[in-house]
Image 1: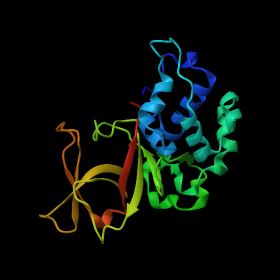
Image 2: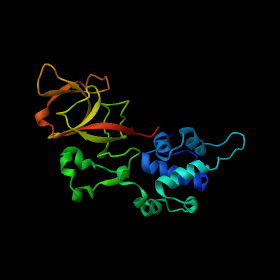
Image 3: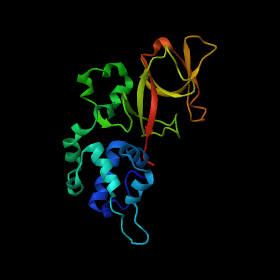
Length: 230
């Protein structure tokens, strides 16, 4: 689903409220939001499309309303309230803490993620809702080295791992280094003990592999999910 619908202004208010909620909590991913509230993607997606037979938008189903009320605490009156931002703020306490995380600002990308573990610094980050539990951080992707799987402008949800126990080679990780934060597919570097090989998904030669010493890595974060508008 596109981030902005061409017929957004034509949506009935209840449908528009749900659409805004999808944008707010999953960056426009209908699939992720549907999983969040326990309905199928098809059930949710249909309320954003005009029914060809009736020429109208389908009503928000009871199943969708039940899922939203269970997850966010919104009752029937919410669908006819016009202040979406205030609704989200007023109901933020109803969201389980396991689903809350922080979107790191661009200023974090040039330094250390470890510096953002203090509550004082976390106050400077945007609090967002994750469709999955127990995420450490969310980070915005910039550049095309990991496209098309991780397009520029998308967000990834990450969780710190202990590399001394296990690294799942070939998977995508975020590396916290002295030169900044990078996202790469990580491979074993058999010819250089103590190093890991960083691989870009984009086959363009300018995104060639490079090796990083584990001694220069503050932390390794497994990418759990990518959120992007479709």
